[in-house]
Image (cartoon, rainbow, N blue to C red; front, top):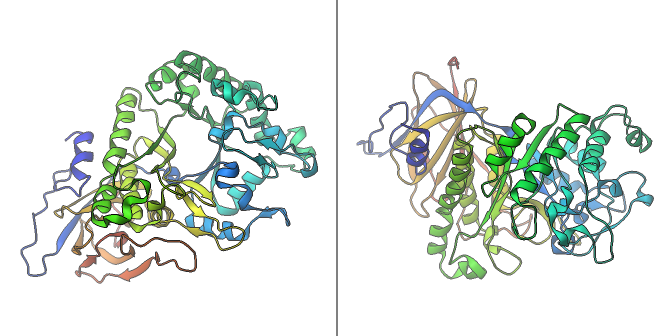
Amino acid sequence: MKRREFVKCTALGGLTLATGIQVAAKNSAATDVFPIRIDPKPQFGLSPWLYMQFMEPLGVTDSSVEASWDHSRQCWKPGLIEATKELAPGMVRWGGLLSAYYRWKEAVGPRNRRIPMYNICWGGIETNQIGTAEFVDFCKLVGADPLVCVNFESEGDPSFLKTPMGDDRCGNAQEAAEWVDYCNNPDNRLRKEHGFPDPLRIEVWQIGNETSYSRNRRFDRDTAVRKTVEFADAMRKVDPTIKLIAWGENDRSKAMIDSLGDKIDYIAFHHMFDPGPPVRDNDYRKDPAQTWEVMINAFKIHQKKIEQMRDEMAPYKKPLAMTECHLAVPGRNRCEVLSSWAAGCCYARMANVHERNGDLLKIATLADFCGTRWQVNAVMIPVPSGRPYLMPVAKVMALYRKYSGKEYIQTASASDVLDITGSRTDNVFYLHIVNTSRSQAIPVGFQIDGMKIVSAKVFEISEDPEYEIISAESDRLQTKEKSVTENSSYIVPPASVSAVQLITADVLSS
């Protein structure tokens, strides 16, 4: 069975493993327990960066950075740090559309000398009190690796080249290389003058945020490739050890790889999409059943996008980096449906798609990182006061991040309503289970081929799909821990996301 066929057959639970394991249609016993069969053989490594978060100063639109910073004490707000530690992202990205007019030197050094910037895309003024050093400090505080998107000559977009006041916002290859040197060179004089004797160390850098979008205004393919070569050469000359991400969407991946080869390490793409009515414009509350069907099947759109990128990468096997991704639904306060648990289950299915494609997909996210208003955020920051809280997408990402193995393994179940993925680290196995039914509970049992399970625990989030989280104080999306005794079944609640941890008596050689 080809990998593409396996991915498709297992998207809804699957009946047969690629290894040939057969699963009965249904246990004939009175308990009607559905066995989940696990092939312990590792298939490929899973990257810790599959649970990346994306931070971008969004000005008056969402105040994602300014609301995160305590200006009175010149530090990150403790509540945000606490919430982010719970989220536990493997990586945090700095940049986005902002990177097309962000000049990094304005946001380093003494605070009273930093230069505020007009936020061209999102409106308002950014104080630049949060810059490179503060961002790296944030990543250290929450245990995440930093990823920075550099100013790629304003993506070639005239609207980003200058502010209405005439300020030059275009950053060239030399400026990007100087940023790498500032962060990574142990002897960088400017960084030391700013009070940082040790390197800030940023390993992964992205060249170009979305250069193939707005085609008539941004770089054409050949120009983008030529300039990516220029940036990559300049940045690698400063530090040959860095990892570089090049933009490759809209049929640019082949040209990028053909021209740059090993000069780049990942090909980037983004995916923000609307799953369709009735979730638009806050109509989702009118028909919860239909909303559930749309949300729980939205993963198919996402899977198609990733399959497209896989096809483009097939001759090269170059790793993929999906550095932005979330549902984008019209509506007041942008996508209110995303505060519902139905959205949490939807995102869990998308996360399962990421895991199934983890042989090539090495960097991925499912949300913008934090903010005050947009529901696409993983963490919401109530203003002017209040305790930050995790949105449903963040609850799922935190659960998966905490209970995931280092290597992907194949699973199979006879149930057509369970979406299951598996992973392992040594003799500890993990399953991620989404019950796609709003009303049906599914009893399951666990079987690992050739291995004895000595301990089983379940970490479960289940709630009415219509439930919407609006504050930390009213948060009902709590993870429940359940023990499963040997030979007993676990009843998977309807509309639930579960992480199962299975420990075996021995370790199968990989």
